[in-house]
Amino acid sequence: MQGNQSVHLQIATPKGVFNGSFPKTAKISEVIDAVVADRGLKTGDVFELCHDGQKLTPTTRPLVSFGLEGTVKLELIATGSGV
Amino acid sequence: MATVREKILQSEEGDLVEVARFKGWQYARQENNAFKLGVPAKDGSWVWLLCDHSEYPGRPPAWHWVNPDTGVLDAPGDTPLGGGFLHSSGTICAPWNRLAYRQVNSRGPHADWDLANWKSNPHTGACHSLTAMALRIAQELRSSFVKRMA
Image (cartoon, rainbow over all chains, first blue to last red; front, side, top):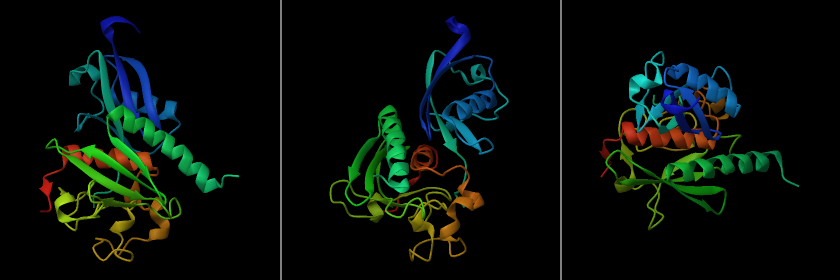
């Protein structure tokens, strides 16, 4: 995937930093699934993708709809607690 | 020869150092199974934590707020508040924080949680590692932080 049709994501995860490119049209849920698989995180655990403290939800929306372009730094956050 | 616990901690420290460097956090290993972590809050200030993982992973780590200059733990001026996570008791309210348990901390919000079963507590979610916990704390400081206790 080259050119402006893809977004390069650098994502801080519970198992180090993920680097990879995705089509702009990739859904947030698809990105989460890919990163969980790549990092060897437990399938079935719930994670959220965040950008500058903002949750990227709903996860059915594509990357481009959040204005993410070029190289972007994100965080993969484990859901839970705050009770 | 390293024990299983030592191997787990060694692996998790590697992940945490990598993420801390990537995020621009301040990480400093301490003596006695602990580390200090500085992360930015919503207002642009820095919040410091001392994580005591001496009983981890059998028991959850204790995430204290710390003054980076004096080393004093959990002083009101160093304690962030905001929402249910950055709890009004001055503790991080999560089953993966040992200080949230009333049985070990008089300020702990929960007398109803079982310390030994912290990983299976449904509120733990996927916060099973030190790096997952640190990422969650940093996220809450960016999104839920309102003020310091004093």
